[in-house]
View 1 (cartoon, rainbow, N blue to C red):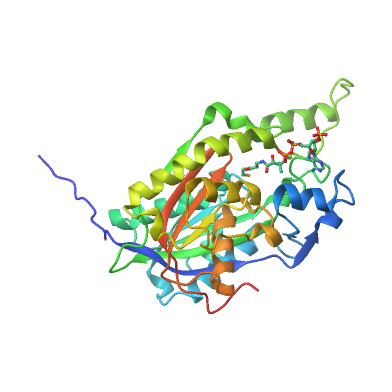
View 2 (view 1 turned 180 degrees about the horizontal axis):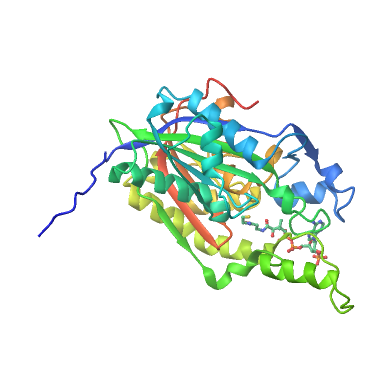
Length: 352
Ligand code: COA
């Protein structure tokens, strides 16, 4: 009987460096309300957002993903030639073919490595971090660059009261690699496809193309084709979050073997500051521990929000490298993924 070789990697892995990119253009609530039927105060009270960043000029999903990746590599004491895989967590790449990671890897001087995209909505970074840790543990790569990058505003209807004030653009990245002490717990993750349509594009590609084609003809019954955009049943997602996420957080703590009293930093996905305050309170995390609130000036950047928020905390000194942090991403799918981690060192090259 022929036996086939098995990989064996390293059990202990951690985030070794972090980098982020925040688009130049800052968009205030007042600017959003120039076209949206809302008020700056309503937006801040219900979401915790004052400002968000939108891409402008030469900025694209590809350029911001590469900029965050470049900083993460520069902020990590590992030769970039050792990166064995690039994982791009995004729901904003504009083509299904080719997917984004190979082009971004090329931009980073990493042409030739394994490179693939991971789409899991706002839970994308949590999924990506888990996959990266497992790739290293399995021996499929020694070091992995995980990038969360989104240009949510490309598919945003600026008049939609459920989304226009929430989403923003940005990118964050971490280098994951082997370490002496383990710094990434098992991933706790899941999904709820029964409620998947609660966060969804209004039409799929085929419907969009069919409409566009019909418009070229003479069918007066066909509605004019607009932009393909994202819609969210906010209250429904809020209720799902209230039930599902506390369980996910408890499961992540159990899987990590770390007591909740030992958690020093809480970095949930930046979907809504009210959801995050509720989660922190219900989980019984120590009241004084710092919690990410990058949403206030960055908005909800989907798969980029956790690395952006982590970077902000490290740059401003709200959190320190080596501290124990609880991460939880959640959103479209509806899906979630979380871990207990040790934080990477503060970046030498920050994003602001
Ligand atoms: N501006 C002003 N008023 C608005 C508004 C807006 N953009 N959107 C809704 N309203 C109004 C409604 O008409 C309603 O008015 P009424 O009480 O007179 O009927 C009231 O505000 C409450 O509407 P509701 O839809 O229940 O708002 P909300 O408090 O649930 O806030 C979200 C909306 C989207 C901010 C909130 O539901 C949310 O953040 N949900 C979860 C999002 C999330 O976790 N996503 C996952 C990751 S992407």
